Image (cartoon, rainbow, N blue to C red; front, top):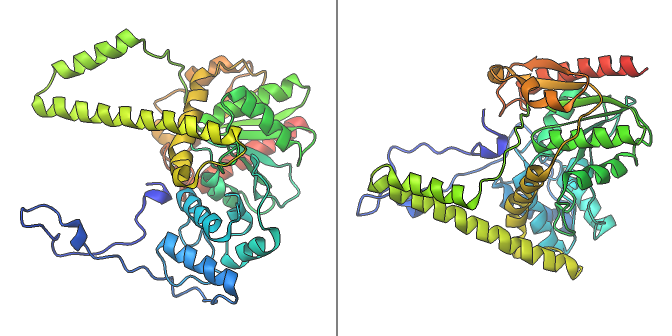
Length: 396
């Protein structure tokens, strides 16, 4: 199953594709999809100027019309990429720098309008995102992956229920208003500071996926070093094998070898792909320089590069942080949630060297890609709930 942001919001059935005179696809002649709201939902029209402007922004960004002021962003198919575009437009129209995490607490136009009216310019966004802050149980803290956001944990939080507080930890500076952290150790230290604002003392229950798993490992080590108790360290189907970066000679050798094999078409394809990679790398370096200069001048990332900054630069920076990270052995148990499609891989061969107390594996019927979406996420939530119960019994 594809992530939600890769699923088209509309489909159009055609008898045949429109073609140009030379037989190629005529993209300009393709019909525009007619998006409309789900008629089963009640419609509440905008009641004031702020709600009217917000409705226009939502309809433009989400490609759905009409959108009522009580319609929920996530029910309409909203995801992290749409949220970035949505809040960029809100900033442009209202001059208000709304944090991306606001969509979790204010997922309707009516609620966002209230924030625009009362708050004005929002404070600089931190790492802690209260995805679901209600409930009397000790909170769960799950760390972002390479992209820096925590939208992909929403379904897991929903499946755990309203009695389980769930907080995401997103990349510092994801809103483009201050510099991101460049080292896993610094990320962990900062995230611990923000965790303590809602839970001053342990035991702490933490987890993550991909890069988030390694940051969670570092958080657990720093907490234990500070004398705090860690009740659960959860890893969501993440594998890691440190690799030495190739030398310049190895890179040249790889290029020569690739160009020596295959026909002319394969050689041209390789050169084209490599040229595209070099262009992207150049853009990333320029974004690094431009954003660093903006932050030093006390300014946010320029609006024209904000999408590239969030969707390309932040993941690239986080990936570089992972490559430089040298994890230490964690003096505790790691609970590993493994997708059944990855059962040929032994997580102990990856994570065994980083724990002194072993690994407890929980199987989830899923692939690595769809473990956090329905119907698989409900099973994952059940397994996680059981692991939490055992962890709380150990620490009580």
